[in-house]
Image (tube, rainbow, N blue to C red; front, side, top):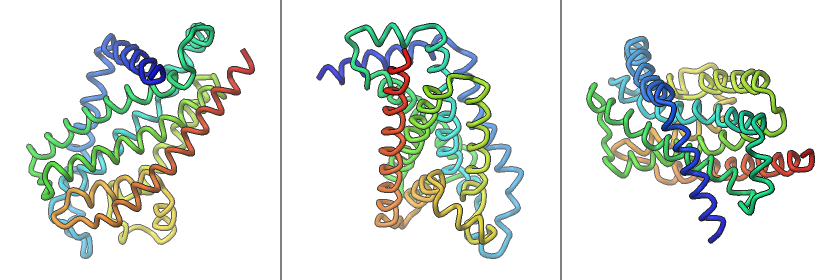
Amino acid sequence: MKVLSDTGHMTVRHLMALWRQPWWIAVSLVQPVIWLLLFGALFEAVTDIPGFGSTNYIEFLAPGVVVMTAFFGAGWAGMPVIEDINRGVIDRFLVSPVRRSSLISGRLTSWSLTTAIQSLIIVVLALIVGASFANGVLGVLVLIIEAVLVGAAFGCLSIGLALLIRKEETLIAAVQFLVLPLSFMSVTFMQKSLMPGWMQTVADFNPLNWAVEAGRDAVTANPDWGAIAGKSGLLLAFLLICGTFALRAFRTYQRTV
């Protein structure tokens, strides 16, 4: 129970910190809207390509933007960690009775709540501009879960790297190195069958792609629940690996204090 209580306190702390940054809130809400409208208009003509399989690009793109927004946001989860390290905040928590695991789980919970809100906003906007989600509320719920899973996994990875690197510039370089290649080597913007063969192979092992495929399938009229469960299982396994990495990185940090 203490772990849950401490996680709750840390979650509130991080949410309050975000609330005190109105510009961050504004940008985080506007950015996915721009992606949806900009990429939706830019690539609208790809639906005319034989084999694309969809006549409404916004409807195709929306699940990808939901997942990509979670992915991009999670990539920067380590930045506040470095700020807390530099200000001595984490060191003060280490000598307090707060459970060590809650220092990570609290951050992940706050990021997950933020991701869910962003996802709902993107879904509503997509509906306004002409998309439809044939599977209704259930499909949208599964889509948001997929976004939260991939966000939590890469959030753990970012936090772990931050605890080991402890330099903002290096973390920024590492995040940029991962984010754009993984985004474009997925089915976020294009059907997998239209991608080069080597990119299709990379996509098969890309956690971001697992989330996009599962989320997109979930909102269709006839989802393949077996495939969705399989990709969700892969995401859970990846989250476990990244979570373990973050905890080990935290223990490494503790030994250096």
